[in-house]
Amino acid sequence: MTRSGRESSRQNGFQHALVFASAVAMLIAMFAAVPVTGAPGTGASVTDLTTAPSPRPDLPDVTAATLRARSQTRRVAVTFDDLPLGGPQFDVERMAAMTDKLVASVTAAGAPAVGFVNESKVDVEGETGVRLALLRTWTDAGLELGNHTYSHPSPHHVPLQDYFDDIVRGEPFTRMLLAEQRRELRYFRHPFLRRGRTLEDKGAIDSFLAGRGYTIAPVTMDNVDYLFSAVYTDAKTRGDVELMERIADAYLEFSAKIYEFYEGVAEKLFGRSIAHVYLLHANELNADLFDRFAELTRARGYEFITLDEALTDAAYATADRYAGPAGTSWLFRWDATQAEGSGARKVDWRNEPSVPEWVRELFDNRPVSQRLVARAGVRAHVNKARADLGVEVYRQGTSSTRIKRNAVIARPVARLAANVVESQTRR
Image (cartoon, rainbow, N blue to C red; front, side):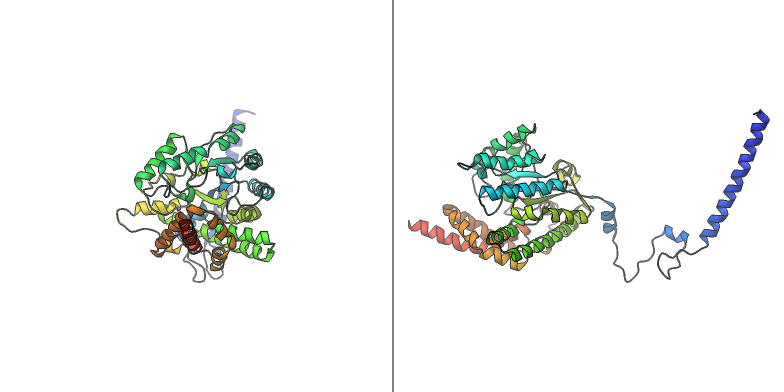
């Protein structure tokens, strides 16, 4: 084609483009004049879509916080305490079935969980090998293990050096199992979520853990599953299917309320959704129900993430200067720390969801709890002191769910502890 031919073709192309652009402009003008009815009777036009319409009186008001939450993908790391089995203990065959089911449900849900081990529950004469195999089920599935001390002592009730010794004693089996997977022991979870009765004790514990290379595993959500689990396991042992189903439904309903409450707490403290760390326990309740718990979690817009990923959230750099009787959510600790200057907390913790009273009563009156406390022997006076303290703090109206749990166990513990101490004194 000659140069003049190319120029003629180019001009024709420009003319066609101008005609097309004019046609598009006419269509846009015509369309803008046509009302767009997003809802009957609104008369909204295309130009109206650039501004937010006034809320209809029959629809709930959507706050900016709600809109932010909906626009964000919620994230949660799931952790399990008291491995290989938390709560009422039973034979290793039953433990194996529970472990297989729980690990299968967790992995099927795509939850990269961490399980925190009490090695005293592995170091059992004649059963150590089979109990190690239970923990190996976790690591073979690609799940991580952490240290939850050897015997689950409270740093509030034992000398600090004894507490440190218990931490070290809780390492060997866990280190060995992680080494099989070419991993290292790196996470520590405080028993009862207690970090120290005083700031000095808390600082000493933090320094000791740092010196051994531990990362502290915080908790922001806790659904007191061990309370539901205790009565669920009792019902399962008796074959009471109807009660098991009732407890299961109550547990999942309560778990949803815990999600909602702590989501609101995070919003008040940080103005946004944070990456949460959810505390559960290794028990039959979660083995039977984790698939439904995972469905509930996803329905609230969450994705499961690793504990590593959760801790990258800037919220976990928030100062925690809380020291006191409560073993509680880090959100409670952060709220207490931020209130130091003004004395005014942002969260009314009395609004934290309460366990259904009928579940409390089942837990309070179950024969198993009485046998467990009676077997505590000389430690019963410690349990009594813990329970009495829980009642005192609970009555002050400043407690978290974990302190409310102390109030739940206070009556049978205090009653039986007094009897045990008295009988031993007479001896």
